[in-house]
Amino acid sequence: MSATGYRRHIRTRILKAVRSAIRPGLVTTWWMVRLTVVVSLAVSILQYVGVIALLARWLNPLFNIVGLPGEAALAFISGYFVSIYSAVATAITLNMDIRAINILAVMCLCAHNIIIETAVQKQTGSSALRMILLRTISALVSALVLHLLLPAGNETSTYAVQQATAMPPLKEFALHQMKVTGWLTLRMFVLIMSLNILQKLLAEFGVIRLLSKLLRPVLKIFGLPAKTSFLWIVANILGLAYGAAVMMEEVQQNKINKKDADLLNHHIAISHSNLEDVSLFLSIGAGLWWMLLPRWILAAIVVWLRRWELRIRHTDDNPTHLCRTSKIKIRQPVKE
Image 1: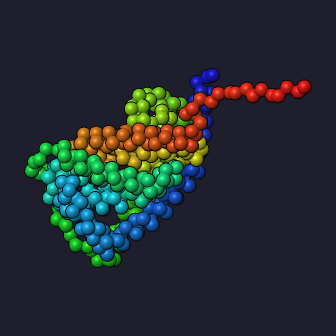
Image 2: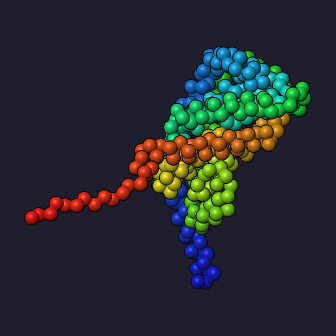
Image 3: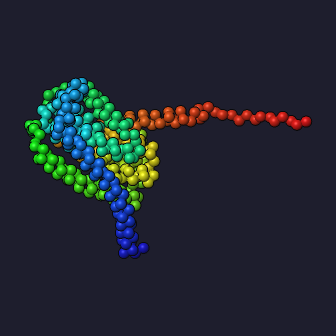
């Protein structure tokens, strides 16, 4: 093949990949935008009327158990229903030491944006209730473990502590929320479409197969199938919300079966978005390895427990393989 013909062939493959990515990308973007707008509106109303702050006050005793001041509950609740950005924005109004910031960071990284991300995981084959319970319990367990492991100290964070302000007038608050939602929608559209096109290109040129081979040892430790490698990378870099398009399409087109998708969901429910979200907490003083290692270990334990659970269920559903059957020949009566 001549150089001109080769370039034409490459362009054809690229255009084919891009065209095949547009429609599913638009469908997923529309689904995500509708969900995001509704959830953002609902949470904003709850925040404005004081329901979020009330929930945080109820959680004060629980947060004292895991070594956090009661005020930290407000940051966690904000992140739980909205995003890491909301949690960090609230956290910087609190005068917490580095130890408390590490604990709060791990809690928020385990359980944040719970409504939208749970909807994504449900679309890819996992139980919504199970994912909510898993992420909430993981947040509390990891916080308690860090509370027991982290040395006591009064080292304060180096970021400038801001003073909490009262809620603005309703009109101003509504305009601000509309602006935030608009920018979020635009960002979501760009990221989801770009990621969907990237996935098609990587698949077309065989890069995903290469990634599967390279990551097989790492994923084996986590208890994950090699075929989940690309989705694992997407979830770790961009998170669940922005990786929704690729994850949903992989399952819908049977490129990954629901069992493997469910195992991946159990892992990334606890450990995902380890670039942007982790960086946000790094900026206010949290330690990198305190945020990563506990969640990696907990995610691996959860996946292996899930595999064991599925194996037990399979055994209960198919009990015949536990005993060896023998063929008994029955002698027919001889006709006289």
